[in-house]
Structures are given as C-alpha cells and as structure tokens.
Length: 145
Image (cartoon, rainbow, N blue to C red; front, side, top):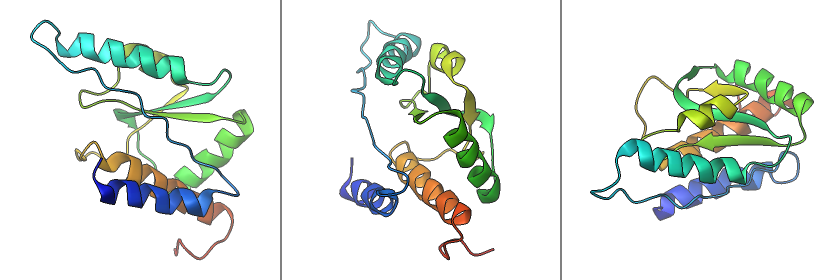
C-alpha cells in the first residue's frame, strides 16, 4: 500500500485505540493467472477471509449492493454491533469484490458509496467513518451536525 494509505489508516486507529480498537488483518491476494478466472480468485480469497474471522464475530461485508448509511445511521449501527458481539469483523474484498460465500456469512452488508473507490482507499474511509461514528456516540466535537 502507498505510504499515505498506511498513514491515514494509522491516524484513525490511533484515535480509536483505547475505546474502540480497530485492527487490520491483511489477507494475501491470489494473483490471477491464465488458468484462473475472477470467480476462482474470489473463491480462494473468500476462503482465506472466512478463515480469519473470529468465532462469534458480527460480520459486516463491504459490498456495492450493501446498505448505505449516513454518519448518524452508522453511529447507530456501531452501537448495535457492540450489543451483538464483542468482536466485529469488517470484510473488504479484493479488486473483484467478495465471493458469495463471504456475503452469505455476513450478518450485514455495507456500501460506502454508489461511486467506485480505489481499493486501497477503502480501509482509510472505513477507519475515518468508524472514528466519526465513535465521535457521534461520545459527543466528541469531531463530527459537527
């Protein structure tokens, strides 16, 4: 990942560190070859993602067909997630998206935007939006109505 992606992600995770820890588990992507199509690559990536999910985690898949939330709606979702489980796993697929098995495993699907975002940027947007949700839930001035 470019340095600015790592820097941006670290900025928001450091802000959340003590109250709502956010960890990133990167799964090695499968390189597409002449003998593998996109579906095969997605299936292999999906198997790796599913294996990395902690038992009893509330799973939210990031998917273009998921629900779009305003910042206030996301803040309410974050509170619901905390009530469902002590661990929440957010699944971000590879360049071709998430395999159907990942979407089937998900308790919810979340769409960040109807726009296509650069794959690397998604982790920064998610971290920032989670920090914004935390700020709303804790009456922190970061989010101003």
